Length: 94
Length: 261
Image (cartoon, rainbow over all chains, first blue to last red; front, side, top):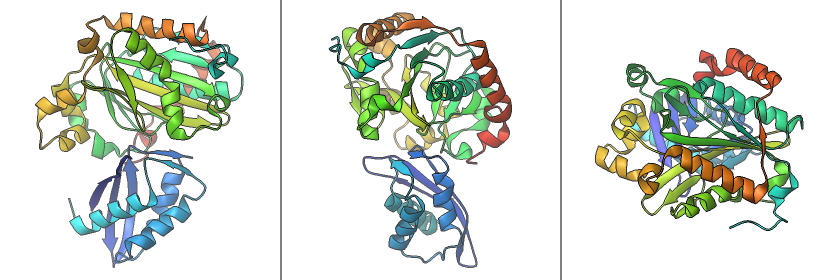
């Protein structure tokens, strides 16, 4: 499943994922944003792995925020990631 | 137009590297190698003007290869696909169609500045150079150089140790039809507007200035030299070696290209 969200005043956040047994799997985050250090991209994706697909967007944003606590984000926000996840789950396969 | 001598740029002995065309993957590797050299204080702060030996799609560090690039279209047009170490968006490059440069600087140059402010700071001299050629351009946060007639270019940064890499690609000319055959994002983003508006979205410097590409680059270098000082320099043999190693171990590998599949 594939979701995209252009953050107002920021960059495009893209999420590709699968859902198995009601949980998020194979979460891949991508986009034209900036992150320091680069490894924080994996930290954010990893924190979503295995999360129940019905997790509220606020909770998803909180988890992403915690995962990126030691990173600098530019053009991407935890809320933006959560919105892209929501769109991926809503839109289904694309 | 000149900045006062108290300009923070003036604290450094800026070096200019302006070399013969090299393959896209080598450019990716040189950016990392030279950033490491400046971070280790083995090289003074440097401005490097790029010349491309081949057409390329350059995708950002965090972009998905399959979401951004039409690999078949790229192959059909002989366009090489490479991934750079900075974030930001995909670019379609043809030799002679873009003006690309890198700045390798100590982070102290932008100390106390927000990341967003540092983008505009690093390209102020370019806006001055363009203004002197009659192009009124400005910074569109976060990382775009734009004008009333359309977008001109985009910047990207990354940091390594005590050094920051700031690099920029500006459009000198553009083959919009070909671009839409190699970049997916362009095609999807513009799917409801068509190719005509894609051509309008970017307004290349050739149309805006009527000048040869070399003349614009010369004015940029002159402007940097006048504002900040600039010593002619070259890539050292050991720097070439580092870059070649990085091509073999990183930038030329499938693992790096598909680091975000």
